Image 1: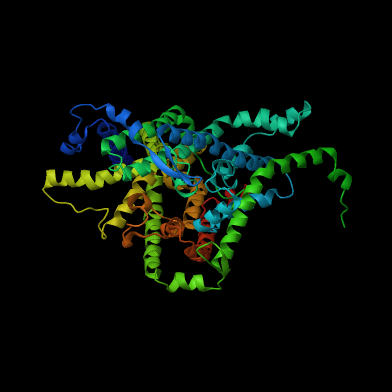
Image 2: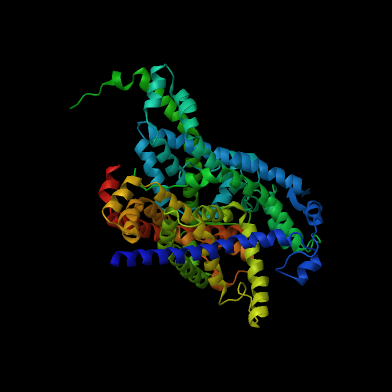
Length: 294
Length: 312
């Protein structure tokens, strides 16, 4: 009797949690539904009804955004206008390459720390913990000064190739994943006369492919949606997210209304949402972080 | 004294291994040295310097620290300091138990958990600019329309109102931040060996005892990592102030330290840069003992600390 009471209590708690999930989940989805519906409204339609369905579906908003959205930046001392396609190209370049170099740095470091015994192995692991735990706060103003001194500021390729150090959450995540791979595979390659590089390229990387692709896709999405890089470090290289950020403030200047701005946001969101849908299973399963102990 | 076997130490196999290892480390470590070691060294040096509008520097002693602590912005910094503490308390300390409880719901694969996992990742998949605009439009246009229509009440602009603006920030952070940590916690739970859960069931555990005595102790390393890194960034939190208000229209009551530092860099007044560095050093000095104490405390209360310590 007492036990069934406890079971009922647990079921009630689960029902309450389920209801909260439902409300919160809806609050996350409805803004997107509203964005898509509003992006099909005319200016007058939007003024008449903020929340309702469009009275006439105005598909032209999606074509107009391509001609309306233009960003003017100063490049090499003169004004330069970027259209949607230029900004998309910048976003794509950043999203494809910067996550690659970021991940490369972490993979190289975490692999050797996880799998090899060498003089500074322990030191490197401890540095990772130190970096994560001890918050040495280099201020943004110093970062900007150093970037300017090193020629990285407003320079796309150096910014892409040097995404920062290897340490942080991803190091911990990959360290755990590399450590979990049994050494028997690499020993078999060594017996067959293979070297360390062969083991890394032909055994370890293929085995790590699901985790690495999940991290790459996540970083790709992060980079595609990133507006702050252009804002802070690359003012002459506007990405689509940055363009839309500027555009939403100055939409009146460009003769655009909110439905057209939202059409732009919908276009910008399509690649990342599509990628997420494609890789959803791998992404949600790969996100697991262990402790701060070796 | 034990003799070192140099022949063994420098055999062919070892040399190749070491060459491979250090070649692999070249690119990541070069970046670490430049973007962490050099950057922080420069930051420390900058805190003791003054900067001219043309970028040239001079020795300024402790003047920057004095300006940060007693200058015109000191009142604003005090507000920001308190806001950072509140934000951390409400989003991490209050949010964590809720995240564990809700993560457990997903772990038990209750009704709709697959759909929840998909929907909850959605905000992380679109640009912060998009989420922010949607939220702002809802609060500034949608909410007042609904209140007027259904309750006949005229709602003030909650985002611009000094009394409600910080509450909106906290709500926004909780609303969006809840999703990603939930996925991480539930994934940590899914990594628990099913045999342990089964053994618990044989011993008569119910959902509550399973959560408290099996699940939480086993995911404790993940909780520790989250809490320690959360504590280490208490005073660099910036909320979404820039997206909400831009650089210049932020209500004073919502100021946060991370935004204060961001603003110094973005306004572009080079003479204020050293004060940003001084402030970041003060933040570091305050945060380090708190972080170390938190880590020490969490390691002490780790219910399975012997098992977890054995790993090392």
